[in-house]
Image (cartoon, rainbow, N blue to C red; front, side):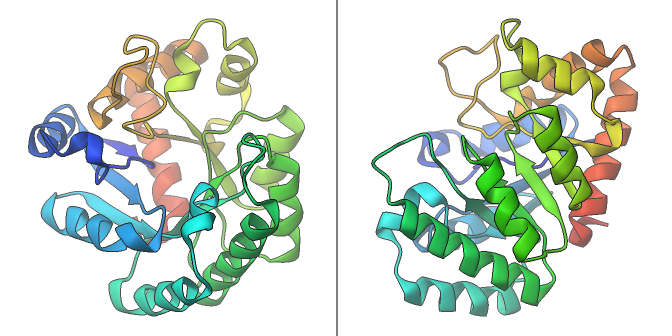
Length: 254
């Protein structure tokens, strides 16, 4: 069985055929999907999706690229829903320094407050870290949470080692399948296998064979095969290890 640790199955891109997408993934061996929210407005959609599809588990949080639509009261809603809905993680949260027009002050405010919610509730976090690895690490050293996943990891080996030291696993998905992603592929091949989890980020971050098309959780088995080839091991070993890793860091799955 495979675990997709980051899949936006609730996204509008899946509205026409969500049942088929979820069914195909499950038939292909993807037994568990973590569905992270991005803002208060889609908390209900994420929860409904996870109640409807077997093997789907919710994470709730405010994404850094949605903070312009957030209000401080949303944090109170998140705190309440952590108690009532029992998500497996706080996420997707973090920082994004790739898009310069986003309000970095607001990003940091919501990130810090959500780290506090995760700390106080004992939940892991699903981290968005695009172009912001060092800044995210700075806050993780200040506000200690019970680990989590650095989603779509694309940093240096030194940064990877620091996330691992702080109790995090590193998410690898479609970006790893592009032959020109040499640095990322080197990390996937050489990092401790115990530190790696698999993800699709569907409908985004499509693998090489999809290109600019819509990604789906059904691509995870082929992504797992790619990781196996990079490491020179069997896909069964990859599935077993990455599932153990995901369950270790996302305690509610255990």
